[in-house]
Image (tube, rainbow, N blue to C red):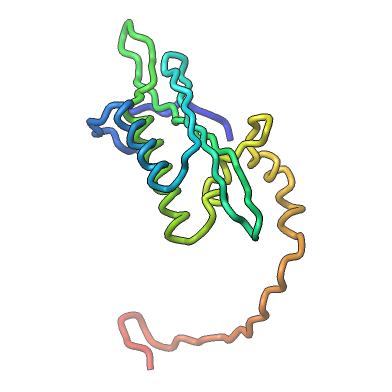
Length: 171
């Protein structure tokens, strides 16, 4: 997927009205991770070079085995348009708020649908070389999809004729 800059004046950008600064959102992310039992976290906080992310380990029992996965969530870069003699810069206020709500909703999905956090964060899992595991999975998706898939139940189809006119209640 090609990357284009996203600007804070785009109608699709959420959280434009947030009054929370980036450091407040960062603290809330740390509290959120702790609430869900995620203890091993590390931040890269370098907004001057447009690099802000949180990395954390997920230790879960999956199919009877303890699995430790590394997740890396980068703050999306939501840009402020440059005015006359200014240069463009990232609106960290919005970027960190988006990051907070993404992490919060992903953890909530994991809890509410009773799926492993590892599965919920799958697009953000990294291997030992810090490469996205999703890239490896996507390159083999066709092979994976057809590995021992259960047979789909056959369904009997039935044709239904509707004889009523619009506004009438069918018999």
